[in-house]
Image (tube, rainbow, N blue to C red; front, side, top):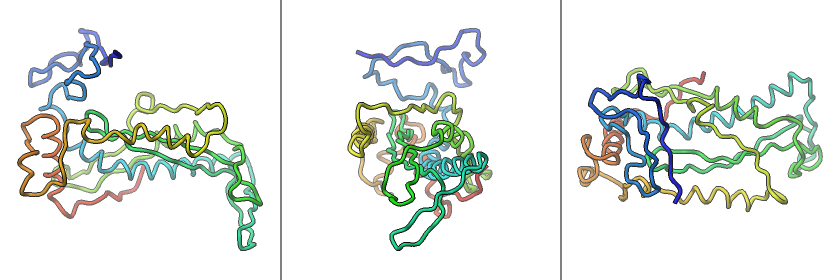
Length: 257
């Protein structure tokens, strides 16, 4: 059976000392796949449950900004290289000038065991055919650089909330640790069905993997699932319910950067 390694640190590392609640801050164990400790904070009293809830809520907006940033990066790079736009004939016979490349993105959101949204995306970069908008043309630019640039620069701050008047900063984190970009090398054509098959294995993971199963929660049943001093899923539900009680707090719209 495969084992999932933790990230060890030396005992002399200051971050290896116990937290203020007396709990260890590192783990040197290698866990079996069915170990119930997987996905659990080392100290639930130190863990920022509000931040995790806000991240899950704001992740779709961060992805939207990232996909836009990928397109803008390619367009800017084309201008730097002096590459002219392509004149494309539309279905109505009109001529329009479009960028030489067009990114296309498909993604699924996997609910990890710790109940954090984790994205798997397939991003394709196509060149533009002047007479056939549906044609697949090899791109004249690198895609990996654009993805890394977008992941490093896409960010925004949420609207103020009574729990955090300054708002939460939403980013992808350290791209060297949390971003895994791999070219897709396949025997034969990378078709829509093959991409769908790749993404489907992640789309099947639901909140059941986190230890929480329920229907839509309301005031009549919330106390059965939410407990700010309970186990990990109960604390997350409590944070969701508490933060969401402020109806005027919606999807953040502050500027990126």
